[in-house]
Length: 442
Image: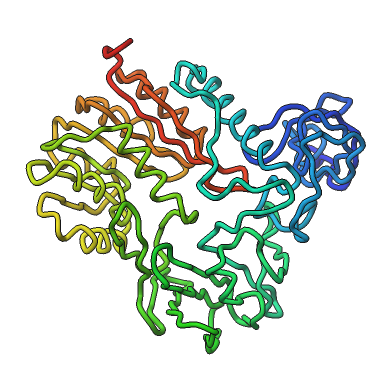
């Protein structure tokens, strides 16, 4: 017999006590029947009315929004952004929390992930439990730092720019994004008609005046004439092939970090906070302490940010190998680092390319993997190379914790961990873990 479909609970309301924060920008609560709720727009210790947004009877957990606050936390503020709140824009998770509380919540998430997935306490990870704000981001409660230098807008059916609602394809039209950097806001994307476009990305480079708009049209749509108040380059992404084509202007922007200029083409990856690249390079180099003549790896190297910093410090007697899967990023990295004859950039997936290099030992490793992490296979290979120190840059604490457990199995311990709040108002953090062979100092 075919089982009867479970009853949807979407729209049902429950009065709940809000428990601890969880990874992903929500808090944990339970219904009177004991069913787990992941509640957005709430804070630990509050009593709220939670309205179910996803889930059905008998499900392992339900998702919900706090639609009424009955007993507020002392950390709660009115969300500064008019587009934040239940059912609205999904870009920010913590508009309703004081800045200090946001960092504390993020620290609690990192600590929980380390303990649960790697069996590490903050002390064992060499971390004091603090989450450091980026330079210039210490603002009073009720104010929002304008930090996001790359904003991808979705477009409504009638051509209005907006942002996606949480876990939805629906678009929340906006007239201004409060976390957008000044260079993005001045492009006025929200004020134009983008009929026929699927998305519009606005990029404001750090360290140069380069501005770029990347258009993804719907099939068969004509590109709009982009006339803005300042010079801007325009790119188009082919919906079917994903290839990037130049419409006019430069096909790249120039970013600056660690005293060098980096070309980033085709809407490629660069840290979105204007202080992030310098902050992370400083943390990585302070942790690795490169020496003249060192052999170093930069894995998932992008356009060569860490490879360039390493090459500067290991000198002509040293060498750096970067590995990156993106074709355009590899072209940019080779261009950016052309003045370093002892730097080589290879294209391909790290787990496939690294074994083919024939490298059996290195002095230093930097890895900055995508959100999913490096994985057991790559970590096992790295652990066999005998690096003096390894710097792991992570945008997801869960993936970091899993990989740290693999490194422990491979004979490495965490020497220090630093956590940076490079994405204010969101649940995201950036971590830099420095590892060394466990025999040293353990």
